[in-house]
Amino acid sequence: MVLAAVLGEGVTVDRFVRAVNKFVEALNAENYAGIENVFGQKTLEAYPMEKTKPAYKLLLSTYGKVEKLDAPRMVSSNQAIFTVHFERVILDMQVTFDDEDKIESLCFLPNFDDHCAPAER
Image 1 (cartoon, rainbow, N blue to C red):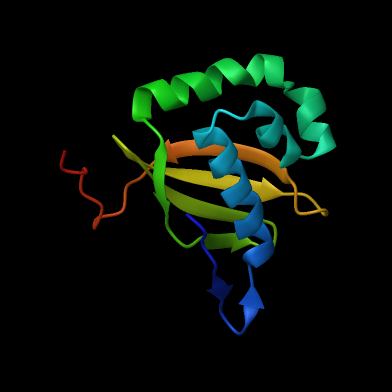
Image 2: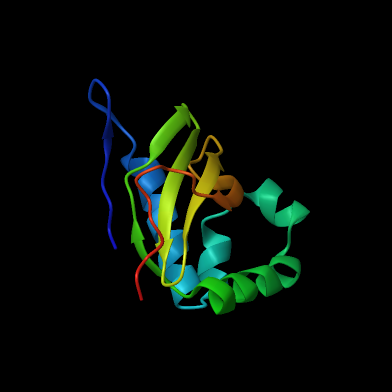
């Protein structure tokens, strides 16, 4: 599951990739304490785990576990979009990072890439 990436002229995005890999590993294991560890304090205060845990459970029960992450597409110096291959669907995950490389916001969106076809099962 580990993903490493380099953007443009040697600008590394490994710090963001590490946070997203930790999130995905914790999500797949349903390790909610591990999920909390990758989020910034402001985000945890705004969205405590007791409120977000049902959404993570629904995500897993609906789409299955994450099987693969594509390299990130950097939107800005603190925002990236990762294409996430779940067992039953491909979604884009837009992630914004704080100054400590913690996840500040996370949003799953439909993946509209022309080359992405539904996974054959």
